[in-house]
Image (cartoon, rainbow, N blue to C red; front, side, top):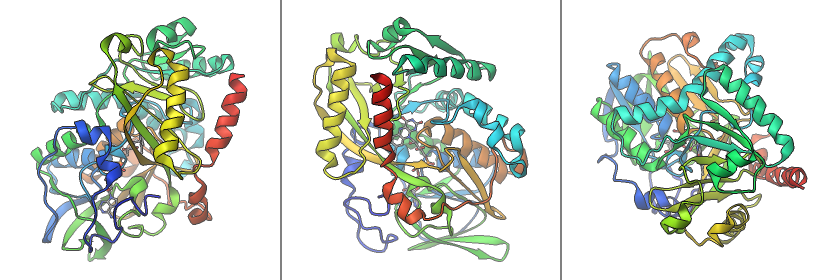
Length: 455
Ligand SMILES: Cc1cc2nc3c(=O)[nH]c(=O)nc-3n(C[C@H](O)[C@H](O)[C@H](O)COP(=O)(O)OP(=O)(O)OC[C@H]3O[C@@H](n4cnc5c(N)ncnc54)[C@H](O)[C@@H]3O)c2cc1C
């Protein structure tokens, strides 16, 4: 669980910590350009805004707030991108993961803005990949970004109806989407495994660690101060401001953003009572193959799309910039993950792309996805001036960038009610501490359902 990262002592930064071999063993750690030089927080400083967490949410928020003239300090417990932002598959996907656009508006409570607010959230999601790639281009962030589209192939003929429904729903929100028959999907993916699917042309892929390091660089250039190796241990009210403490320093600020997501109790207890009881950290294993020769590569995802299919036990694939296929697998129980996860993924690659043969995996790592019980992103105003966001549900590259940027508008004076996301009260999951031990188990049900649908 993220509460105890491997090779590391979760101690609030007071003891000597070991390097994290899972993080440093990733493809992205081996290939991303170095991030900006940063130091731990020392002493007492004042700022307008303290942002806790140096991932996409925290750093996109820092960038926009600093651009708006705020004095911003970011506190990251480890290195930039240490959480999901530095470990993910790098697919830039402008959708939510398990909830369709038309289903969002009716699920937003009237107190949170109701259906109208839900529709605004859907539009934010629809525009999120476009927004992310534009930000990357504008700031010249070198992160192997390729905006050649994201494709969701379907694993059974019955699922074509769902693909058609999704195309209709996203087209209604102005997204450049297209329904694909089996031949269309085969020509985009190079695989006969699927029955059709759909594509969104604004999606794509990037090197996720390079992207988050680039965000840190541009946030610093805009005036934000970023401290790494600075785990926050508490947030306390001091008069009209908040004091955010680390082992060696404090930041006193009018506004605080908690952007720790699924890693929110990795370094200390949950920083805010009950916040971590609203999100389930679910481990996702990632891996990258050997480099394939150009002629083999040209037969798989030949137009360089990012691809994740319609199965509950998601099959996802993309090329990196150097000819490695980056994929992954979920396990119900993590025991023996270093052998079991690659074995499962290798079997899958061979089945979907027989032309690749049995792959060897040169890099194997994992990270924690922040899942909410209702699969919706959750934004909160925890107390006057304290904002938080959790719940990317596995689709956070574009979504966290967009939401982080919107949170900055609130820091700069926009009313919460005028942001395009619903803000809800904390709704802790009953029995969360027990339930979070079993969050990977639904994968067994998904696999059973997928197999039945494929048969
Ligand atoms: C394996 C994996 C694959 C994924 N694949 C994709 C994908 O292909 N496409 C997609 O869209 N999404 C994907 N996601 C989801 C996406 O990566 C996340 O939604 C996104 O990175 C969340 O960003 P964030 O900034 O909110 O959180 P994070 O990146 O997790 O950042 C939280 C940060 O807070 C820091 N922190 C925690 N506690 C403290 C503290 N006490 N003090 C200071 N700092 C603290 C952590 O060290 C961490 O760096 C994937 C996630 C995982 C784990």
